[in-house]
Length: 355
Image (cartoon, rainbow, N blue to C red):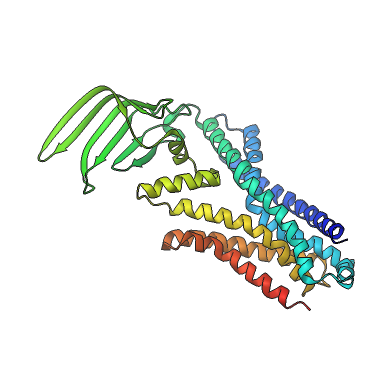
């Protein structure tokens, strides 16, 4: 019996959440499309703007799922309450704890969907969309593509002026630091790249070494560099944090910390993504508490309004804390989990007040 009721509640909540998510994505997609139309150039015209917007939808869905889960759960459970179905369930002997468990199972399904979107679907499509937009706008103009990068391997700092998908970089600058972090040498290679064995190939290298009070210049037609920066790490360094998977973020964070570089931006994104995924599990249970509380006799409009207010508050709090955390050097994990922890506390308190 409980299994049938659980499936019934799950279908109701999932259907309402899907409807809310479609509406939110339609609005977000429309705003994104209009914004992109103001910046068309080159081959980036209306058809590609539409493609770009569609490719961005999975990433937008990941970002909106916590809010959609809350509003959808409020509407779905509210409809059951309005039809006295939840009251009948309580009369049949189902406790608040059992009802919360049933609703949490729906949250578990939404959590899996959110995790799949945030790890395997959204980031690669977002990365493809951004690259497609850049290439359509600027064609093969490497100077306008904005894919120059700085990377560090221990005492060596590299500046690559361009990076292609085949990991051929053109000219490259190398700055070697001494044990006191002073500049020991500067080198420039006219052409560079990474071969299939992850070795760096430097052509027409000219190195200026600073030894004591003298300057030495060394030239070589071909050098094989043995840096710890492989093609995968270099590729990650060119990608915005939002377009990286969780595994990519973790890998790049480890690289940054290994080289004593600031990883807070990427740590914030990683913890923010984990916390957002976990929050989806909380939202349906929080909605159950509200449905049993002051919204029990309210209409769909009241439930929709409270869902929008709480969802907007959660979103704004997450964004503000993430930005302030980077400015004031707060712990990224604490900042990311704080809004979700507050929602969990509110949920527990609200459920305990139900009689």
